[in-house]
Length: 297
Image (cartoon, rainbow, N blue to C red; front, side):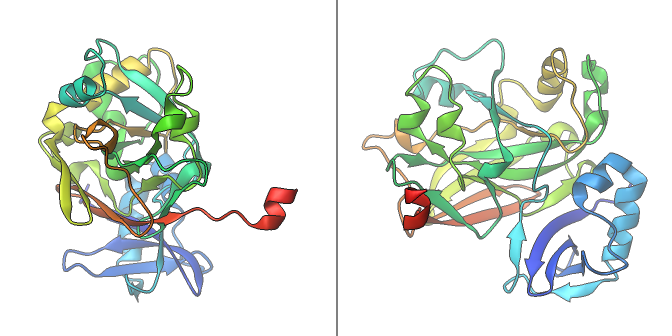
C-alpha cells in the first residue's frame, strides 16, 4: 500500500475528509458530495484497498485551506479508547510508582475528544490541568488472543494524542477515570498516517511536547516499557480489538504535576505535541465556561 495521510475537517460547507499531499497541501471532499469516500473509521473497517482508493479519490478533491477549517479528531467516536499509563520508566518513577510489569490500562470516552486547533478546556472545578503527549496506534483488523508475531498486522496506522489530565480528580480515588475524562481534554490528530509510512510498531520515533514553545517532554518511542506489539497481544487476551479502536500508548517523563514547582496549563497557553514522521498536534488552552442555564437545569 502506498502511504496515505488522512485528516478530518469541518468547513463552512460542512464536514469532510482530506488527504495531506507531499508538498504540504490538503485536498479533500465534503461529506455532502456524492464523491465522498466515507469516514476514516468506515474505511479502516473495509481494509487496505478502501484506504488506498479513498486516498486516490481525495487527492483529486478540492484544495483545503488548513487555516480556514476546523480540524476534527481523525476518528470522532472510536469504539474503544484504551490508554496506557506509566509506560515509560522515567515517567513511572516521577509519578511515584515502580515501573509496571503489566500494562496500566484505563479508558477514555469519545465525549472528551477534541481536534487539532481546538481549545483544551480547563474546568471550573480545578486548576490542575496537565499535558501528556502520546503516540496513538489505530486498530485496523479485529482480533482476540493475538499472537505477538501477528500484532502489527492488526494496526492500520498512527496518530498523536494529548492526554489532558485533571490531576487532583485523577487521585481522588484509586481509579483514574474521572480525571482522565473531563470534556474537551483529549486532543487527537490531526493526521492519521497509514502504518507503512512509519517504522514497524512506530518504533524509534522522537516524541516531544512543548508548552508555550518550551520543551517539557522529549523522548523516543523506543523507551516505552510495553511496545505496540506487546500492548496488542496483552490487551487482546481479555478484550476483542476492533477496527477503529485506538490505543493511546503512554507518555514520557516531564509532566507538570511532577515538576518543582508544578507546571499546569492555564488559559491562553499553547501546547504542542510533535511525533516524528506524523506531524504536530497543537491546541490553545481555555477556561471552561458553563452557561448559567445549564447550571440551573
